[in-house]
Length: 121
Image (cartoon, rainbow, N blue to C red; front, side, top):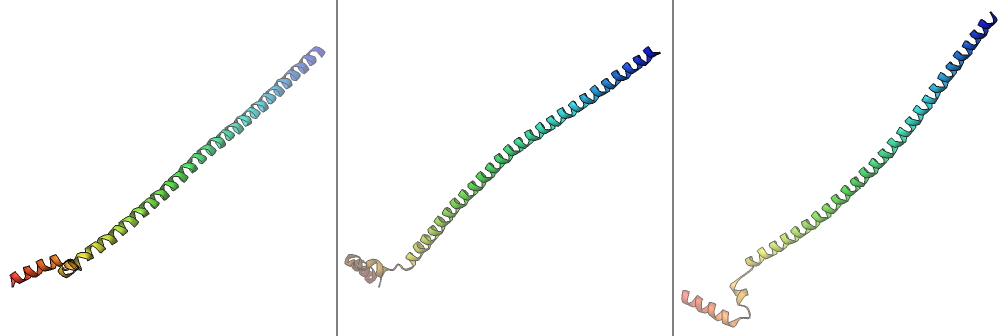
């Protein structure tokens, strides 16, 4: 009977040892899972950071290009307004034009217009 008790105790010890090994394996697996989780989290942070940086640069580039376009359009507007003013001035000149002004200080043309006027009368 003593042998059976020893055998039973040996079996209990082996079962306890197997149970401890299983617990240890489960703890190791949990540690591996935690390590993988931490690595995946760090990878995500790195990728997110890179994407954020790229998006931020592209956003700033777009803003810079918009500002350049606005400056360019402003210059075009100023040129058009200047052109409009020159057209207005040019349009006013013919309205103020007269034979008297055209022939001022030009005796030859004064004589020609006087002769033309005399022939029409």
